[in-house]
Image (cartoon, rainbow, N blue to C red; front, side):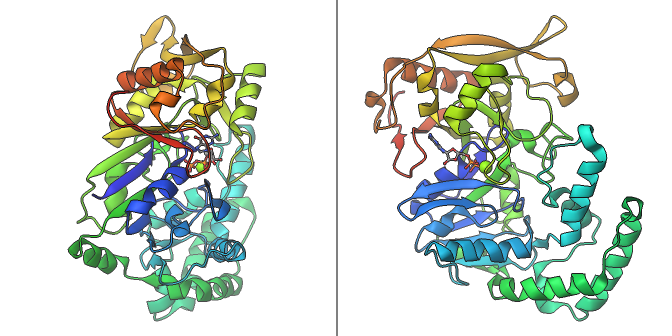
Length: 425
Ligand code: GDP
Ligand code: MG
């Protein structure tokens, strides 16, 4: 059973935590999009890890991890992340990590360009992570990017660096900055040497895995609402976060996804800009942010928070084609007397029950209903029976309104803090 684990909301739903848990049953874990703007936090017997680039399966012995051609890889960050893991006793070798030769390299000038543009936009900024992700994807589609395979196979890499820098200097002239060819080439060589042993034709690996009946887990970054095509454009990421893209971004379009598991957080959070209709403010927001530890794993930025957003979640389940869902961080809501839920949006007297075109979100107000709280610690729950009836009722409500069956409920950040749902909710 090949499975995709994807975000249903704005990201940070707890995908990394679920990949870490479920990777036990898989042979290969592959990241298929995005770059080091991801922040997947995993806590298990090996320690606490924040993974930006590497698949979360890297913490499981015996799992082969792949970084697919749909990814953009800052090779300096790559070398640092591998070192960080080594420092904590996790060995990352060409045996347990394979980098596609078709993955794109995120260059220092992409980071620079990202920062310069965000600064130029000032208070109109898009909320970029400033890690070069938008510019590098733009260059990929402009066919002006370096791929990791260039490090191995390019007949004249220096010439390519010179030509691309010449073009890039025209592009960024308005910012009053220039890029140095030798410096850029030196950077590529320096960090290229570190990533080179990991680079290979991962398509072949997947073909072999398929023949041998191996099981593949596709790990998404961000969530449905940040998808470049179907999200809240332009406040999206620059890649496709959607499950249907996973086999392509993994470099294995011949693989079928047998099951898509959507990760839904028990409440909402968003990092960066854009419409976030369910957003809470003031003391209520502070309390939820504090309870949920909602500070960006990649950036440390305080995340915007709100109650569970039904129109957005229902939309996320739909575009992800989620066969089932996992509800994470249910334990965070334990402090609430009553639990707010955003059941619809209201704009100029019009009610939206389904998620509208992004521009229509401007001026929308959340329609809030309250569910009964349970007011007790549920973090030790191992079965549905261990949950208070109010918590089960909240889960039943989610399952019914978003139209997908809940198969796991997560009640803590540690690997074993979860409930596997079997039978009726
Ligand atoms: P991702 O980007 O989707 O992988 O999610 P993040 O790792 O950015 O954010 C999820 C955060 O919540 C991390 O700090 C996790 O350790 C933590 N977490 C995940 N699941 C649970 C849960 O069920 N309960 C609690 N209390 N924390 C959780
Ligand atoms: Mg995250």
